Image 1 (tube, rainbow, N blue to C red):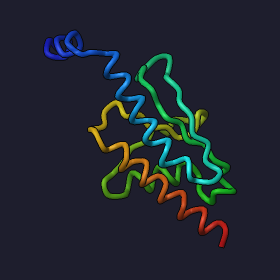
Image 2 (spheres, helix red, strand yellow; image 1 turned 180 degrees about the vertical axis):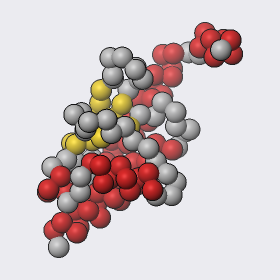
Image 3 (cartoon, rainbow, N blue to C red; image 1 turned 45 degrees about the vertical axis):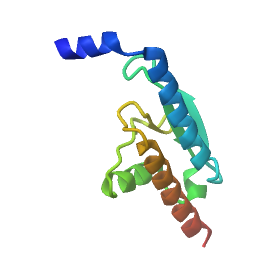
Image 4 (cartoon, rainbow, N blue to C red; image 1 turned 90 degrees about the vertical axis):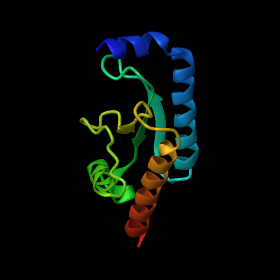
Length: 123
């Protein structure tokens, strides 16, 4: 616990927040090309008080539920976990525990899954 407190006191919190926001922006750029996908940001009021990206879509139009997308992400390689609570804000991700560059892997995987689902739904 001492190490965690020590680390917290040494961190430039403003720079860390800016880094998270830049990572979310990179993800938004990738995901913006998915038709029917609504992308936005939020910060939970209680736990994980860091910037999150939410993803919402019309499940019948996309041909996939948010739960199905989360399952494919979890079962894929690499395994990716998203925040799926009750989906009231949509499926969400946060760069909080990602290493630099992992946000791009996550965004590309989400895009590929949704593009594939849309293709099947339109066929």
